[in-house]
Length: 195
Image 1 (cartoon, one colour):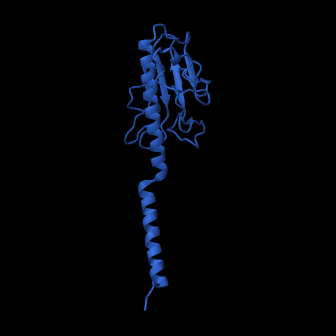
Image 2 (tube, helix red, strand yellow):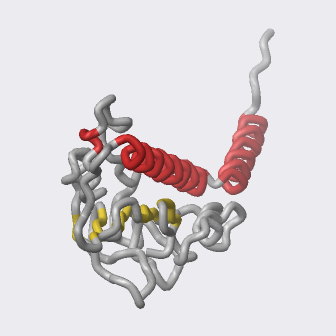
Image 3 (spheres, helix red, strand yellow):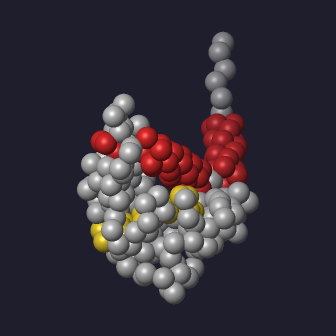
């Protein structure tokens, strides 16, 4: 004679599994882990683009460059700098590398050995809404990439906003205030972090 589980035993096992599942979700916080992975992408994207621009400046004899201060953002028009500096940027969503993409004026196709990038990176969220990509106050303008170039060849800054509690301003692995730049609420890389 075979004996099965009673209804009470099955309910107890299901209750234990539910409690464990809730505990795992609360401890791991999958939403925060997704934000952290997008922030890691942002850090990698900016590092790659920064390296590509440095390489471009080292191998191109006469690099194209903006003749005036240029500010571009992948979405929106709120520039991620202090209010004492330019507070607006031109929206350029294009990822092309011929100088007409969002890294305005940087023509990576001039590298004779070939561009190190097939296209310019784009923020994983790329929105200006703070509900989709909350950021630290007072900026609170969303997540996107921004590029600012001085009229002097080789002087530039690339920015991204972190969205996870870990990487943004005040977090355990804060990259925004510890990057050496002049804005504690944006991750900054480039040749001059105070543009």
